[in-house]
Length: 90
Image (tube, rainbow, N blue to C red):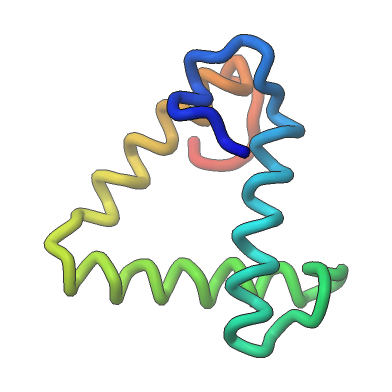
């Protein structure tokens, strides 16, 4: 179970965060038929992530949420969580 504010819990690791993302990706992939039981390897994870991001953009359009602002906010969390050593979301 994800804590209400996982960024404030010093016991939460980046492996925990990656595992939570895996759960979301598998659920999305299973719902869309792209994944049977896990994200797998090769291009499958890339395609699942890309499709989820596109669908999130559609959801943001319909719910008046700025995806760009959310990505900027996510980048700040990610950089803090990785000690600015992460290779994603510069």
